[in-house]
Amino acid sequence: MVKTPFILRWFLRLLVVAYLVLLVAWPVSLVVRNTFADGFDALAHTFSDPYVVHALKLTAIVAVVSVVINTVFGVTMSLLLVRNTFRGRRILSVLLDIPMSVSPVVVGLALVLVYSPTQGWFGPTLANWGLQVVFSTPGIVMATVFVALPLVIREVVPTLQEVGDEQEWAARSLGANSFQTFTRITLPSIRWAVIYGVVLSLARSLGEYGAVKVVSGNIVGKTQTATLIVEERYQNFDQPTAYATAFLLASAAVACLVVVALLRPKHTAS
Amino acid sequence: MTTATTLTPETGVRPGRAARKRRPARAVSALTRSSGLALGVSLVWFSLLVLIPLAAVVVQASTGGWDGFVKVLQNPQTSAALKLTVVQALGVTLLNVVMGTTIAWVLVRDRFRGAAILDVIIDIPFALPTIVAGLVLLSLYGPKSPIDVNVASTRAAVFLALAFVTLPFVVRTVQPVLEELDTDVEEAASSLGATRLYTFRRVILPSLVPAIVAGAGMAFARGIAEYGSLVLLSGNLPFKTEVASVRIISSIEGGNTASAAVVATILLVIALVVIVALDLLQRRVTKRW
Image 1 (cartoon, rainbow over the protein chains, first blue to last red):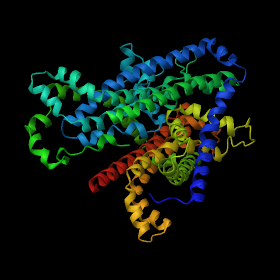
Image 2 (tube, each protein chain N blue to C red):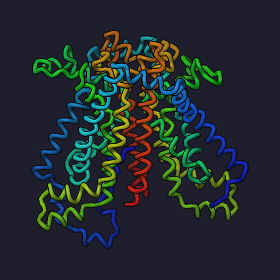
Image 3 (cartoon, one colour):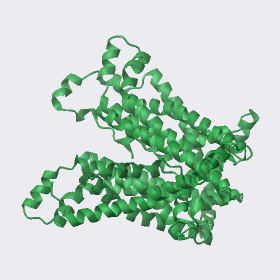
Image 4 (tube, chains in turn orange, purple):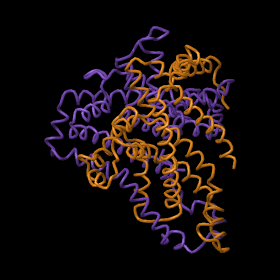
C-alpha cells in the first residue's frame, strides 16, 4: 500500500475524529448526562407517569406487530423476486424501495387521504364495518409498517441470490414438498439475513415519528407513542421526562446496533 | 440501496458449472399456483398500504388542475420552504461527499486504535429516532449549550440536523468499495512516478465515483424528506427555517389538504427520480464489472 504522508494522515485522522465527536458522540453523551443529572429520579418519575407508560407500551406493541408483518411480507416478497420471473418484476423491485425515500410526513398524509374515517377513499366504508384505521392503533401500525417495509427485503434478497437454489431443487427432487423445502432448506440458509432485517426493522419501528404524528392524531393516553411524548413533553417544559423517554428510545436503538454489529461477522462468514 | 434490483443473471456463474446447473427452465421461472397466490396476496397488501395511498396524494394534488398546482407553489411561504429544503439538502449532500469519503478513507486505510468505535458512531444516526436526534443536537447546540453555541431556530440548525441524519450514507457506500480496491494499481502508479495527488485523482477516485454518487443520492433524498429531527431544533419559522415537510404538516393541521398534497407530490417526484437514477446507476456499474 502506498503510505500516506505522516502529516496528512494525522490531519485526516483528527478531522474525522473531531467531526464525529462534534456531530454525534458529544451530543449523544449529553442526553445520557441530562437523563441522569439527578441520578435515577428522572427515570423513576417517567415510569410513574401513566401517560408515558401507556405510550411506551403502545410503541412496543406497534413495533412488534409491524416487525411481524414486515418479516412475513419481506421473506415472501424476496422469495418471489429471486426465485421466479414474472412480468413487472423489475418495476416491482424498484417500487418496493419507495418507502425508504418518501418523507414520513408524506406517508402520513397518504394514509390519511385513503383511510380517514370522514374524508378518505376507503375510510368511511371501513368505519361502517367498525374498523377505524386513522387516529387509532391500526393506522399507527400501517404507518410504521410502511416506513420500515424494504428493510427485510434488502437483507434477504442478496442472500437468496448468493445461496442459489441447487439445494432447494435437490430437496424437491428427493420428494420434499414446498413447505418442507422452505422450512428445512431455504429458511436455515437465509436465517441470519432475516434476523438482521428484523433487528433493523425493529429499530426503525420503535423510532418512527413523522408518519405516526400525522396518522395517530396524537391523542394523549390513547394514540400517543413514545416519540410523540418526547416532543410534547419537551415543548411543555417537562424536560426531565422528555430526556428520560429519549434515553430509553436511544438505548433501544443502540441495543439494536450492538446486536447487528455482533451478528454481522457471523453472517458474512457463514 | 437498491439491493433488491441487483439480480445477477444465473448465467453469471463460472462456465464450467453452467452445464451441470441446467434444469427445466420453465420450472424455475414460471409461477406455480401457490407462488402465484402468494404474489397476489402480497401485491394486494402492498397496493393497499403503499401504492393506493401514494396515488391518492397525487390525485388530491391534481384536483385543482394545473392552475391549482401553480397557485399553491406561488404562495410565497410554500415556495420559500421548498427552496430552503432543496438548497439545504444540496449543501448537506456536498458536505457528505467530502466528509463521507474522508471518513471512509480513514476507516479503511488508517486503522488506528479506536477506529472501531468510530465505526459504531457512524451508524448511530441511522438507528436513533429522528425526534431523539433533534433533542440530542439541541443539548449541545441549543439554548442550554455547555459550549455556548446556540443555533436553535436558525438556518444553521437545519443544516446541522440534516448533516446528522445523512452522515452514514456516503460512508457506508464508499467503505466497501475502498476495502475491495486493489492496492497494486496504486503501487504501480506511484512506482511509475505518479505523485500521490495524481494517483488519488486518476487511479483511486474513478473507482470510488459510482459509490460516492450513490451515497450522495441517498443523502439528498433523505435531506429533502427530513422532518423529525427538525421539529425541536429549527423552530419552524416561516420564510426562515420552515422546510417542505413542516409546511405539509401545517397545511394538514390547518385543514388545507389540497395544498399539503401538492407539496407532498413534489417531494414524491424528487424521491422517485432519485430512486430510478440510483437503480440505473447500479445497473450500469454492475454491467461494467
